[in-house]
Length: 188
Image (cartoon, rainbow, N blue to C red; front, side, top):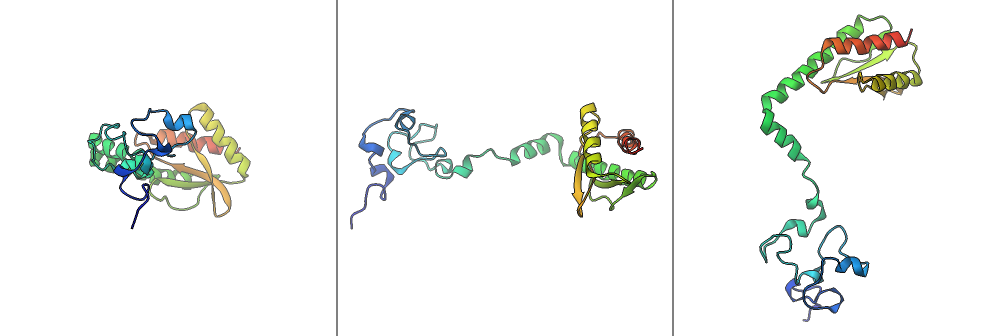
């Protein structure tokens, strides 16, 4: 049984286009072709071993799977955990949950604001009595433009409401109180 060169051993395959020897880095571009997504075609196996610093003949998964060439998304989290430690993450989440509970208590005690549900982790949903969707968006834009906060309106059970998500452990009750006060004042 005879195999075609592109189905057999890559080392025995003839380079694309029937050319022998080394190829320049721009050869694929010059021909308008290419492997696409940075991959390697079987016919291009000759003359590229070691081009990326790998030992010749060593199997490198990034040469065969495009998804392995993407940025490792877990690396920033790992680095942050290594630098700050798991205790800092635990404390930050606990702080966010605590400020969410404080916010829910403040909303309950404020005329014109309604707590839609108990806080879930660090997210609080608030309704401003009498507001339409455009009121939430205008208020949100004012907060962002003033540099006070980035609070986005959200749709919950078909109704536009304010969604406060506490991510930074340094936010305090004074800042959150100011955000809630601005909501009440804007509705007056």
